[in-house]
Image (cartoon, rainbow, N blue to C red; front, top):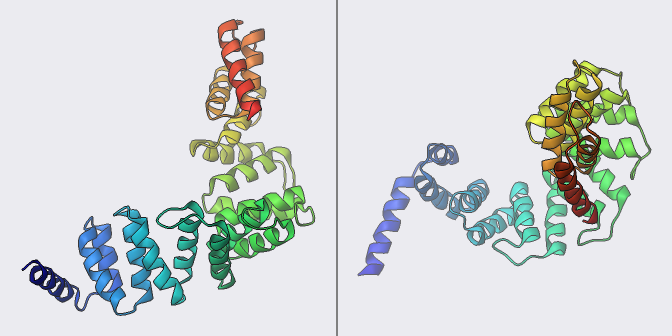
Length: 300
């Protein structure tokens, strides 16, 4: 009897999904009806639609928290040539969610999607090559894949490739080209693009020195929780760079950065509370507390 009920439910589901498109399913998901989206996507995916297979994987991973089911659908879509599915399966495999953790397998999945031209996979592949994570480290290869990803418009890759250009890691050092990459990343709202471009403008490295522009960019990055940006803003507030000097604002920003683990911010707070700097009185208790946290952070 139960088998008949299941068969009837499946038939009704198929009938409900008949004539629906992936867009209909995605609209249902956006509207807060993942079950309706699932029914439609499963029917389309069962017919071999690789985009539906991929979106079904996304639904299972994000909405139903079933990475093991997501992995199966990503694999089917990836076998059919869906590049984002290969990348997402690579991420599950890298993290060991829904499938056994396997760095080498993740690398191969990223590489297949990267060779197909997916910027996100090119970025992930570059990170593994740069770190020597599951594969022999290769700064030159990492830079090559980051450049491809950056040229493909991926904001994270633009920020990181710019950093390589700035430091001369795996590529010839070129601060001007680095600033261009940072600008492209920042224009998309990426926090590290904003930070690196703001810092470049602060120093006048690879671009014209612009304290007002630096302050604006660093503020945007700090608002997104970027500790290095908070630290640089604190220094600007302390020294009156790009805005009127403010000891109170400087201490507040140093504290925010230090709470997020920024070592230099902790070191500055130790000095402030030890010596009574920035219009404060010496505070041995706070100095000792920050000194203890600084020692712990430096041991990591």
